[in-house]
Image 1 (cartoon, rainbow, N blue to C red):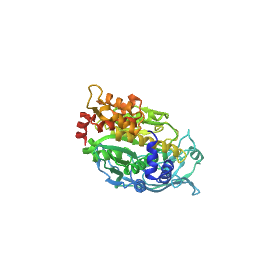
Image 2 (cartoon, protein in one colour):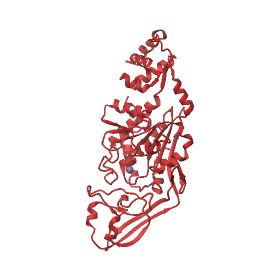
Image 3 (cartoon, protein in one colour):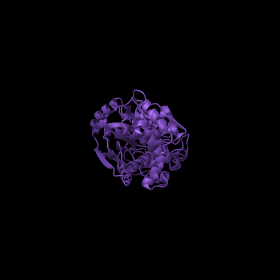
Length: 449
Ligand code: ZN
């Protein structure tokens, strides 16, 4: 089954090389200076909107959201440090990581010793510029390579940060693709990092192409895509949508999907939700190296979705987790770190997980006392006509295991048969009224939808 979804993706969207298409989008978004608010996020959302019609929400600065407040909006035009000869020794126009994100405006002259405490570098990786922010404390600073820092000589420097930090709004993008059912699958990613590729343009690219593909398919679930500034965006969205959170049946946070490392799935806080089972099943049956990790309360916006007051069934799909690769949060996270093959592999695994979630059901054998007589119902004959190899075994597994306590993906795991076969068998049995929705599935559907 794994891999079939990517071929369907290629055909439906007429994209021969999905990994290359994702990479090209990342290339286009890479130069933009994003932050948790401001025109960089808007520009990014407008480029993403060329693929699917995102609704862009603007939430005013000062809005109270859960325990937080939407901050002032930050925008920047230029920033530099010039030496006595007038040469830019640090230049925002060369790389937007050079300025500490959310730096307040500055225009001053100062000595190196005065400037020095505001300069950040990475002595262990002397050719990379670190990524730093001061979102919730008014401050300023510059980031530079350690090599460049060491070359700075004593003397007077001209410092300029041409930024604004004023009342404005926080922008985020949302797309809802209605399904046959109201129950939702939430796909969330962050759009607030400046020129960094894996964290998280990779997640944005995968999410937007998933949305394009799903928009072209008949859907069981309603899909909701969120493109949020990290933390404050998720908190804002949760605060504004608290009344409707009961609709969320499954969720995935997408991040770090372009590096060459193995795929990692971090479970939801619940640890046993359907998305946890679907992701584990897809990764295990892929035959590829992978890791499945228990929930921990740091990382990305799964922290907010899985906070105890919400405890939503939301996991996080990534490759190498944050902080475990040297290029994390520095200029090494660039267009060379992300690989089109990795992006394509991540996309394929997302498609497979969503396919399982779309088809997984909690069903019950309606003739559970002894095996039902399949021959009398013409089921074997129709199988022979369809030339379905191995479906007979799948029928027996489904009939035996579907007692309302195990979903189809659990039957696939237990039987060792491909999920697609188990799903086909369930469809045959439903047609012959031998299988129906488990009472608890009906109940929870009624409550959630
Ligand atoms: Zn990050």
